[in-house]
Length: 137
Image 1 (cartoon, rainbow, N blue to C red):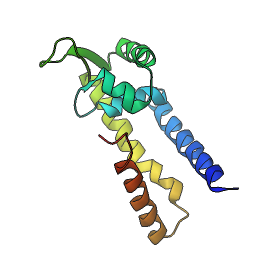
Image 2: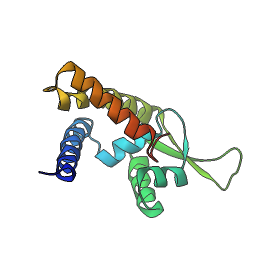
Image 3: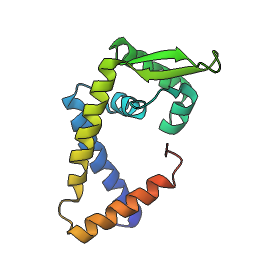
Image 4: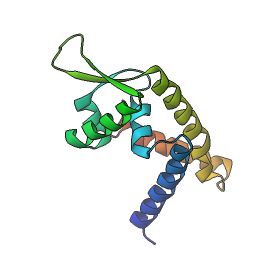
């Protein structure tokens, strides 16, 4: 198996683990990711589409489904009323914090078979990758 294959299977492993966590909260992975992305502050819809790698249409459909569950709300920007911002509702905030905490607690388990030094190195590398990617906040 080459490097690309290993990264592919690592991605599958992470996605499966994340999907299980989301299902425990009756959320799709897309809904959970959306909630976690806006849990601390409202974000522009255009920013969310870009950072989540979605078309504006796909994001609007996701927001519609999540809004029907009263987990998110659309609001106009105070600076520019043409700009649509997306924020969490109080119920969405509670759910987002719970999913985020559970993910942060359980996702590192994928490295449980590594020794402590290798786990720290994986954390360092993951931090570098995220910090230098276009998905960093």
